Length: 447
Image (cartoon, rainbow, N blue to C red; front, side, top):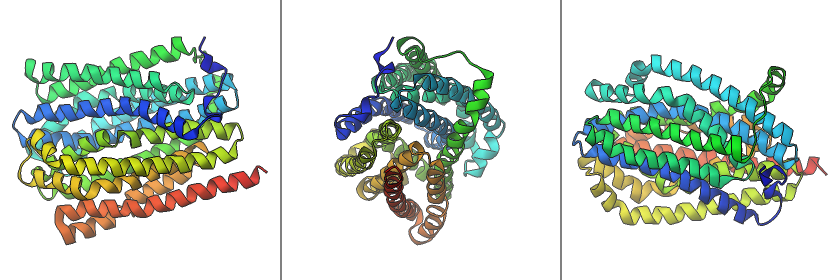
């Protein structure tokens, strides 16, 4: 029986240390996945067809919608479980895991079915056409059916983080990354499957990852309990109270990204290919920030469940400090390595120019994305998921569309990316201020 079933580890000790440990272990797993995605693009660039690279960019925009569903559902599970762990209510934590996983599976199956039936019109909507659209559709028809697998694995990983086992969550992701890395060249070149091989490798990686995280849930931590329909009905409302706005919150991001992709597509496939490379570089370079949003949630949730209000405020402050220092450091590194990145992916012309623009001018703006990640994690784990929904939807609409449209008119494709970045500054700033006010309000009401 795991010892995590007896202690809530984040209610004592250095908060900064907890953030560093949770973020670094999660980042290793997250970055491993995105490194393999980057390697996917690297291998596919050897096919010497800009349409293939551009197609993966379009396909990623669509698949981002499906993955965002899983992220939203895992947020609900992590928030509810971490509170139960903080309150030492392990029966409730186990029941939450089972019932949240059931909701995740049902929603993922429905969404995968819907997306599969709409692949062609969705690709057309974001600007894909001709052979590029055909490549993207082939990729998605292989990848999308595995959506329930990756969504359920996200829930399992969220449960593992909620009980403080970030390492096993990391190992699961690392295993998937390793499988993907080994299979990519074998399927793309060895069997001559091209872009289809890259998609198949990703599916097999997802299967291997859920196998290990399932082992951790069922065997290592014994977190499972028999499914009960009455308990499911009882838990459904609190689960959906967080999951529904969290899904809408996370769907807002790919909506904004799709609008940006469509705007860039108006300037040609070469720019879309450059944007696709940027989309692979960003999560690798800023893996710690993506991980931070998931790592800070259990820390906030456990301290909230334990009634330790002073540590709530400190958790938010330390997370924002960490985010700022990390992004500044990586932005400098990207600036120094920009020529190498362009050479590595053999990008030329417009694609090369767009990558240079990102590395030299835009990377530093990711600090604001990270700040909003942290604020949203705060809202979700303090019982205010609608706040994160409002801010993410606001950022994806009011903080994206007018800025991107106006930026495109003033600066072309470069204005598109700069406009998106400026919009993120506004909404991140408002989100952080609101998060601090929420914590202060909770602290006053608990006295």
